[in-house]
Image (cartoon, rainbow, N blue to C red):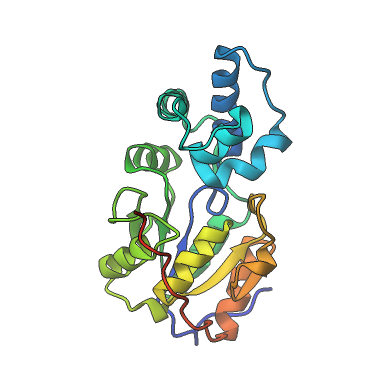
Length: 240
């Protein structure tokens, strides 16, 4: 049985959405394959799509079309992709196994929880409404809520403001390097979600998180141990 978190001084646990709280790969991948077929390209196998899901449309368009945001056709394809995805946003999406039990344990022990994602609000809101998490998150911060998205710390600091908590009283959990960068820059303790998508560019051991957790319920053990967070890292430079 995971250890108790009764003595942990931190007041909130915040989660990335895609690849951390919820397994959205099937629905996001299905939308990509619809887009690929529309443009005369072969569909991709789920195992080829899954590692790119945490990077959202940017990562999926790179995987499917080899495009980066600098490409002339990127913006139009991104808009088309998001339209397809929004139409069937929660056909197969579910919280990861163990996540709902983790949330109940956190709340039962007096901690709050929330979502901080780079997904835009017009997608985050209907997705969470369809999933109806109970107990409901104490805050939801989307990619367009704060001035700058992750890896900047702005969304996490915004969440702290909503919760009335200092960053040092929060943990942030994510499955992408930018999640850990944002959490560290905000002054939070961080965990890499080993059950998530984990990207393709770097290994989680290189991200600078407090640790890597292989199952959601393993988060409880880290909270109970009250390991000190790493020193806050400098925020990423402001984009030109």
